[in-house]
Image (tube, rainbow, N blue to C red; front, side):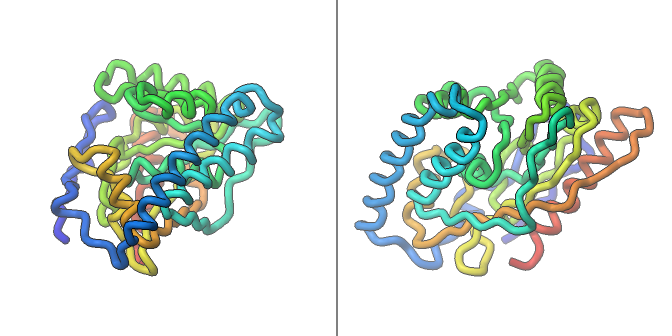
Length: 286
């Protein structure tokens, strides 16, 4: 597959774009799921969503010791219902200690499933596009998981998003963001936009890259991707129609950069360090 390179010399406010499209990036499954399995998965997905919605009152108001495990189990139930198996490597980041800033997790972005997969393995507040908060059902789940929203269509709203992420990090929260700003097919990656790294610098928080790959067997797969103009339902049905998809989550070592007092250069340096780690892990041998 040939995918044109994207210019990495963008400004913080540049509108993210991707050359990925289903017709050019997504191939047939290695092994297709039969009609009975597909129907069972769709039914299971509906039941898993209802279960996740049923526990949202506990996630909002229950004790902290219960919220994390319950959140991870409900998310794992959803991704498992559509045929995705989650596999982690290099351990899961520990929560921040009392009085310590949290961690900014930065991941490549492939699919609508990314946030569900990552929520299934680590407790974090996710940064999502504002229009996600308008989707039925998803809105309730997002609120229960204390999702932070960003309006990517309004660059003027970016400073407020950075401030909100920095505040969450100061409070000791782990925050997950996708610095590419849009999804790619899994066979390629975009550049990491540096703006959100300013939140980690402002809060004195660690930055930890996360590499996310979707596999069929041992081969990298684009079956889990959600790119171009396709609908969420189209992407979901493609996943359901694939016999076995593995979401591989690799937590990479934290990246460090000594602040120079020049914010634009500092956040750009952090973004470049994180991107290089993720790119090597995502596009390296499966």
